[in-house]
Image 1 (cartoon, rainbow, N blue to C red):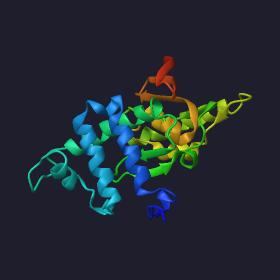
Image 2: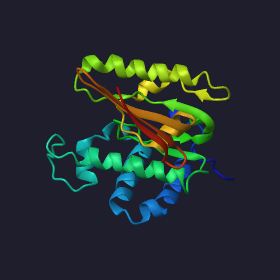
Image 3: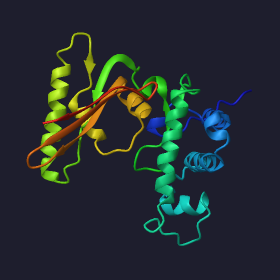
Image 4: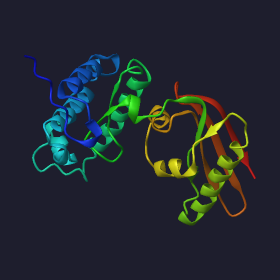
Amino acid sequence: MSIKPAPLTDNWNAGLTRQTVEEHLGRILASAEFRDASRMARFLRFIVEERLAGKAESLKETVIGVGVFDRAAGYDPRLDPIVRVEARRLRAKLAKYYAGPGAGDALWIDLPTGAYSPVFRDRREAAPERVRARIAVMPFRNLSGLASEDYFSDGLTEELIHALTKIEGLQVVAWSSVAKLRGQDEQVAEVGNRLGAGHILRGHVRKTADRVRITAQLIDTSTATYLWSELSTA
């Protein structure tokens, strides 16, 4: 009699088994993205194995610094940001893997921004299908140095969203969805997967006493390439 593998026991992982995740991890580590990146591979394997062992709560910078990057006991992440730096690199590598050789994989190992415990998702359910005629206008960054000017960059973003909704056949991601990603250091492919958008419009605003400089860039999320970029001064 065969024994059916037990599913992982949390809401994100419904229907997935330990064996499924381990096999998927093996494919990722064998890919060109990770095969020659031993430290990244060690980082990913460590957090996935800890997560599978039910130790998600213990995945802190101090634990990872000692367990992955050979820091001494008493390691202080405030003085040595290696875990945060390498976590950004790991997110980028995962995004590149899923945009390339892993584009058809059913499982998605995600490392949410600001966290070190991976999430295992069924990509067929976790992310909407990426639609070419769907665009996300990301919150324009305020480079003026004054928090009081956030209203201007936010207002510009909302005006752009409103204008694009007038284009027939173009789907525009709502402001309430893109606003949640403000300030997060996510890769283009990752944002495209999360929002189901084939294109992203992003930019920044620099406002001084007598001048406003606005830079805007249109990016294809499937290839992470620029389709258009423009600088405007008023």
